[in-house]
Length: 501
Image 1 (cartoon, rainbow, N blue to C red):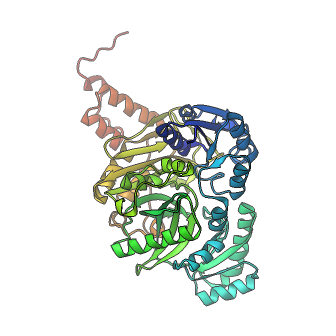
Image 2 (image 1 turned 30 degrees about the horizontal axis):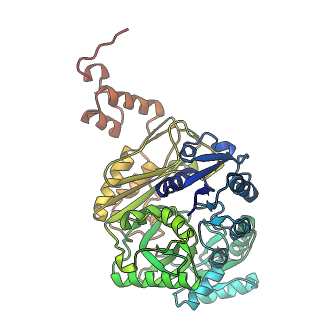
Image 3 (image 1 turned 90 degrees about the vertical axis):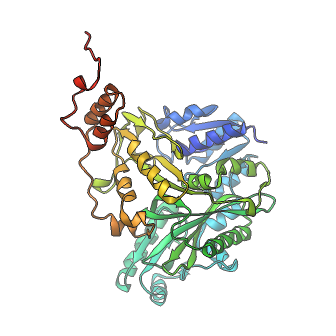
């Protein structure tokens, strides 16, 4: 059993992993950059060590620094969270060479699934449907253009390595292809050090559905059902839910789950992982890629299954076998996750930097918040602008939506601009509420969205003062929801109030 685990990450996922360690009775170790020296999540760890530097390259991505701290503090294992070093096979091998357990899959499986080209070949061998396409390895741009014409436009050019939308281009006609493939290769080379690309059929109406899997060292591979992540901006997910609204038949659910398990077995995969598919308008599914780590959206699966995925990653890395069978797992109710970002939706989603002057988490039955911030936290340009994840659970989708809408309305983040108004607009939009969200949803339904004039920080603080003076009554909550009104007089609104010098 591990006695001490180093968490090689920051923010909300670091906090999540510290809590998992605490649940298992394992000591946790935090590492931090100079920019995160006063971060609130550090206080949840049993020990913390500075890495120095401000940028990710100088801190959380510096393998020698991370491994040096692990050896210094005597950590037996490292949990990478997601991002940073979580899908770096070279880091996995470096951990193994130093006798440190990596909480995640082995380097060989990571190599195989980290390459979209290799993963595609493995999927075909495992009998998993793949999107019509061609591997660009060793092919000239002219040969790729010929292949694209044979596939039929539109096509998607995407980097074999990495993710996050980098090295990805949608091409609508042959005339655009040469410029697009050159740009995609250059971006892939810059981001991942590899200009290897694939060309695949691009579906204009498609849904993004993923299957969560869990596999132990004894050869047990189980699926934990599906999530839909079709609401995406620039290929980045912002809302996720389980069950997937697009999966309207048990036959489709079981076929996708069986394909995911087959692929994981073929890769001899161990730990938590996610097999991603696209589903077309006819209900046919195709393999997209596999993420060899814990996903940002893992809480929705936890809420519908009752399993702690972070804890099970640790227990699997310790050699424990999964004590339950596939037949014992159930998908109960409905869960939705919204990602809250420090960004300005009214101005092309530009990141918003600054100090959080006021922060209030929503709460209540069926409401969960994973965050790494507090009042006074500094939001810097050095890392991802995601502030928190709000997750709600209900007996059905309608209840989960009601809880999410209320939770976001209750959430207060002052000092930086957030995407909360944008999320609320999506939750209230008719197409989304009907569960008909393709990956084009935002472009087709939210392109004309204009936010209501926002209250300034001073106005929000005045609202908060009214709330306190009025004792949290119904009228003050209406003022907070609708904006300041001249009808509210704080000096007459509160009974038995005296101004004492």
